Length: 172
Image 1 (cartoon, rainbow, N blue to C red):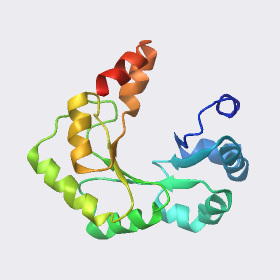
Image 2: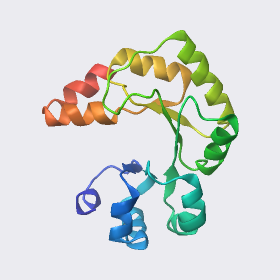
Image 3: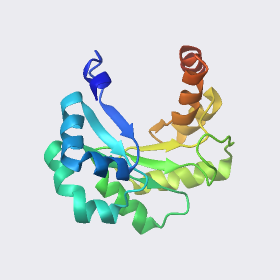
Image 4: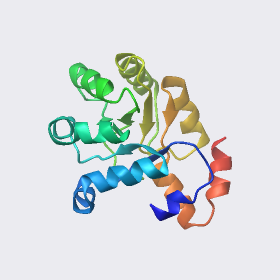
């Protein structure tokens, strides 16, 4: 959190991690730190909506930190709507495929229809697509069917190779 407290941008931050280290750190201290440095949302893939609602919802809301939950193209309509309602202050993260994060994938017209159908179920909650987004073509495809692209693993790979600026420029 120290690195984040010294940043000059006022753009809201979104952190991605796992619930267990946060529990070890302490839920309330974690949320207090998030609030202090401007973290708006967290993506915790191992925290289900049910666990969030039962154990953590009040604490998150009290500290103004909002969860983003993941859905997949095979999620039920009911589940998509539940997740969308829970993400009304953040966004829904649609996992583009069953591939592992950082893997490569391509998109097709059938996927576009599926993603657009899912997007309509999300109502006014923004929906971003992630997993396998690593090129301008994929970003453009995603922008045509939802509200944004998540480029996490591809960006981290570019950072490791000391070419993050070049990578971001290639996506525009």
